[in-house]
Image (tube, rainbow, N blue to C red; front, side, top):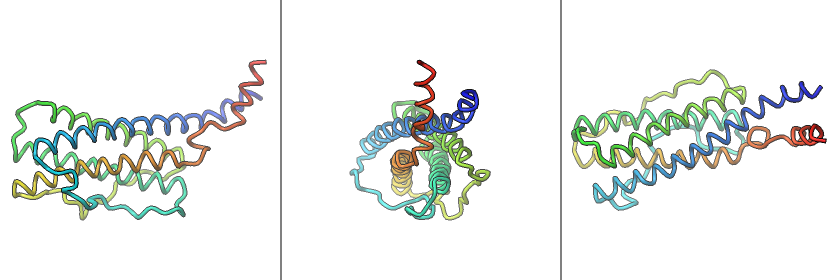
Length: 198
């Protein structure tokens, strides 16, 4: 009988572990985004509030959304962020030259890799929440080509970095607000462990 509890608990333990891992990755990504934004601001002499407005398009948040829908919204936004980030990196290298490998380029690469890792984890959470096959969001309406004027290009890249930072913060908030079934260990598993220790 205790074997059944272990097996039953494994699914929620897995999603709890995945949620904790995703939250930790999001926390780390948020820190790395802050460093990247600071490096870019210093390089380009931008004030902190130079670029506002959302680039990612997802349905607005709602308290009416169930766990699966919240995770889908989050995952969709992060996928769009990665597409924008990849395009920004390509455009920067194309227009501004990508030969040098300094602190900024290393930080940008780290943010991109951490974002990809976060996407894998939110995808696992979405599957654990009985989400449908993950649909790739439409990139229609996203500013993927970017501007051609140098200042506008730099501003566009900065806006993308801010968007990644924004959605990373949203990920942290959303994961912390998930039902305890996914985020925290169920109480009966704890009781089952205590009884086996006796």
